[in-house]
Image (cartoon, rainbow over all chains, first blue to last red; front, side, top):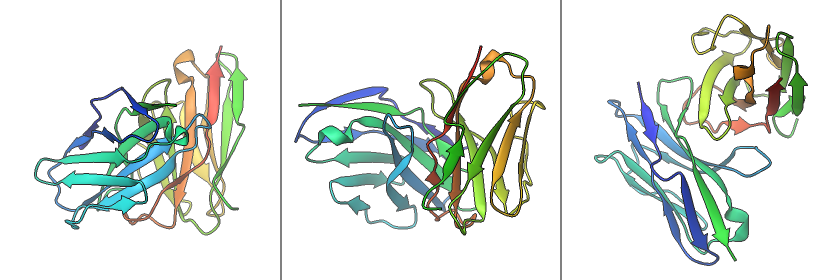
Length: 114
Length: 115
């Protein structure tokens, strides 16, 4: 079974600085998708960014970018110019191309200091 | 609707009572998912629907849990004879279909507390 590991239970960043959240996963599949979701106190999971495993180019969405290392099975999230509104739980998720569900990591709680 | 809607938002129930949690997915989304999130934990997959069909119920924690979906839209997750360990946030999500590349959209969850 695929597992997703987020080794940082908590992270802190100064407003306007850059922070990187780590994620590793274990799979024998070659075709899959990776996601980062943000969960603010409202509880609603919001998609931040996604990466297709067959694409070598790292995905970017405005201030959010990923460092996808397929061989190392690593998928880190970089948040640039951190804002107070970025404070939330961040979950890394994996979905096999032929799976019907996503597997989530335990999450990283990000605090942004003014 | 515009987003995934779940009700109730919060539910406190006595141990041994039955509860029903409702999910109204985004209009046109054929795939629907239920997850459970215990306090401070990640998400545990429970069950998915494609249309009204749930081919795999093995993710449900026990036979006290059941789920159904009618009309390819609204889904209900039922927990019978609730136990304290059932206390968690139950998240519903939907997507256009089961294709893994489809974005999965989540609701705000139903926070269940069993006392």
